Length: 220
Image 1 (cartoon, rainbow, N blue to C red):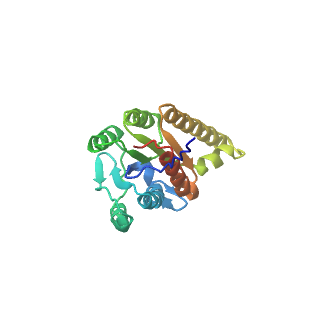
Image 2: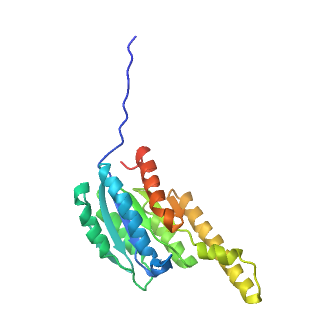
Image 3: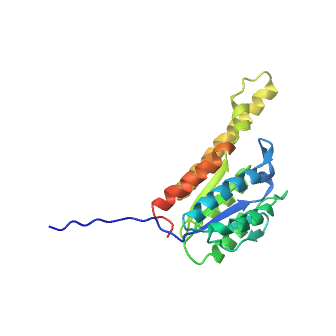
């Protein structure tokens, strides 16, 4: 009788793209800093982990049109290139064009990649366009959608109203939270991995999601 041992090794050299919505909703502050700044911090932390794990990382920024696509960085010693590129990302007082941005990105990717999208949404129309555009990516790529939990909406929705005005605000906030939950549920239904977390946890949660997807061998 012969005994055989198999050793499993995490796949390497996966293309990982961190895509930033630099539109109006990402300029909204959370704990004193714009959402885009919180997103960049989380992405860079995850990018460093990915480089140390042997994967390749690029950054992509878009608003009404694509703004930035870096070359892939393949070595943790070149992490500073990603930091410099990220410093140039800025938000714009305009709605993002998800259709153009994600189609342009997909056309630039020669092989199956993991695309990490940092975004937010404020109205049903923009959310619908975003879902439609993301759905075209999931047949070819692994998509992770990252958004920050809105604690302010929670506070407004859960506060005891002292006036009719307070009641109206609470009802509106509750409606927005329900709408938000529905959008995230629809993303999950079409095969998108979703991370929604408070800003102070977003970096850790994104790293955990990346490692889980990598260990499952879903990228290559």
